[in-house]
Length: 179
Image (cartoon, rainbow, N blue to C red; front, top):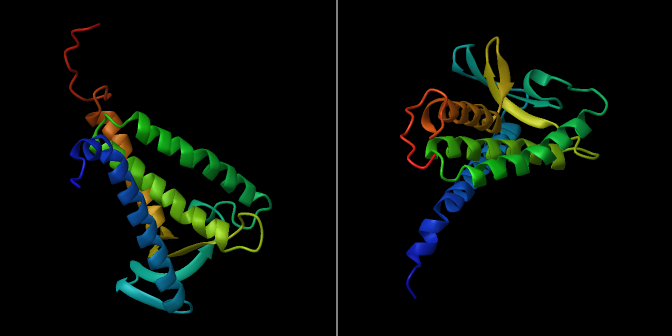
């Protein structure tokens, strides 16, 4: 039986979204396991003391914000509960938008899922697991692949909104005949 190329074309963004999200989550989880198994108590210099690999966990958000605060797990659960379907909806409703912006959204979805998995499955209570971090930039932060996906995804989506979408703030305006 032949592959239905029409169906593939119709669902190509969904197929791409699934691939980007699954791949980003898989890379995130595999690198976290490798770091957890090999870096505890060790620091590996990649570029002097500027870029190092060192294992730590974070119960908060970026820069350990809310780490150790009672109720933070509820806040992160609610953000995740709202964020995941919201990003999914943005991908769906932006499906005719720029591929660059959509890939940014897909990376945001993958990054959110990667860290949510740690929070959901690595704790001893409701959504209170600590996120595994291992990439250390001197004077900045310790983060993981999911965090990189989130940051790169947000930047890509903002660039698309500003310059690449049909209704971009600074993009070329198309002549609209049917207004």
